[in-house]
Image 1 (cartoon, rainbow, N blue to C red):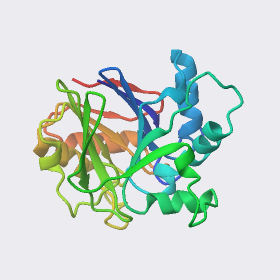
Image 2 (cartoon, rainbow, N blue to C red):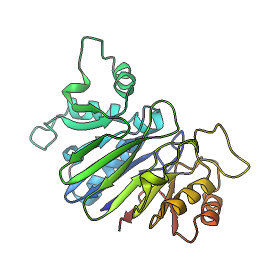
Image 3 (cartoon, one colour):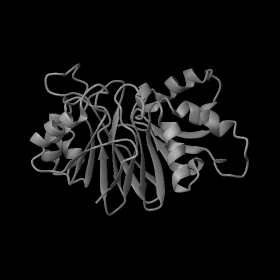
Length: 259
């Protein structure tokens, strides 16, 4: 299993770093996890550099309907619907998994009326919720509700050998340690730093480290750090609570082997 970072900036993209977006590859399956602002371009660049067609993704998974996690599904919609190079793949509807309310948000942006199904021309959407499990080829994906609004879902990826857990956006009000227990890699949001906390709908880096320690994960990767913060300080704060678990940053274009 492999995780590639398309972007990791919290709330808004910055030069050189799009918002949240990742590619998860396992057992011959390729998944686009979160489509934050700027990540569709990064996805195309990644595919071009590695020699695969971005239109042949196996599925898209969105954690929630905030722009920095879902908005680039809109340019993806236009690129797939109005493509001018027939025969290069991408003709099928793309399986897409998202929580309650996501379709309405994206539908309004592309001016989908109540009696229309524009998104359905490109995507094959399925609404998922807390405790749901889906399979994409041999990869099993399980979802868990987080402490965030609108409805937001953490995701656990299991290919039968390795396990990756993504917290998505979450505050400390829900304990995701049981959900992440024993994961080879935990991709955890770490928006805040000590003394720089905002509304309790996100984690500090220290809380992310504590979560990783209690879950007994093999490795912690910090993402969704506030754009104006020093990421090295976030690393230090997470390491101070992680109990010796290796901690890294989800820098754009970084690649992590899971397991």
